Amino acid sequence: DAGITQSPRHKVTETGTPVTLRCHQTENHRYMYWYRQDPGHGLRLIHYSYGVKDTDKGEVSDGYSVSRSKTEDFLLTLESATSSQTSVYFCATARDRGNTGELFFGEGSRLTVL
Amino acid sequence: DAKTTQPNSMESNEEEPVHLPCNHSTISGTDYIHWYRQLPSQGPEYVIHGLTSNVNNRMASLAIAEDRKSSTLILHRATLRDAAVYYCIRGRRGSNYKLTFGKGTLLTVNP
Image (tube, rainbow over all chains, first blue to last red):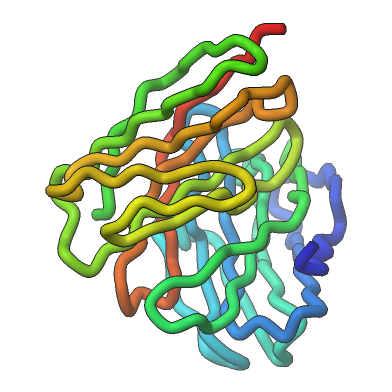
């Protein structure tokens, strides 16, 4: 178990409100990722981090921002939530293992935007 | 884009072997093949990965074709707990371990 905690696990909010999802890890892994999962789309990468204060965009980053001020925490923010952002969000981490690394996933955060 | 092709779904019987295929015809020489699975209502979990040689671990075996354009995940004796979506993913070297998940194969295991 990689010690990944996502919070909140469930959230219902209204369109236009800001939302922050938190991912906390206890493994001191360098890399962290935010994915969203929607029916028919599989998992899609939103943003990722390759170190403290080092982040980059994934394939579906519009409408999302991230921050990583310390190794253990990676925050995903929806500045103004829209119904299209209703999804299950998964955080993942990876340690630095050279050419390849195993991803460890959290249990997911289900967000509903009304 | 690191695309792979998998069947949408497969069915197996409990205690029988399962062979899950994956095509990755545009794979480059340094791309790894990763397999993850996602049980219902859970996050994905790592199964196995390999580069050129066949690989075995406690969960499964990975058979990689000699030309590396395809691979097969082998579950030696399927159990009901193996019912999940299985993802075959190309891992690009130097990509900060970013993995692009497709839709995967939904494996149903019949008792």
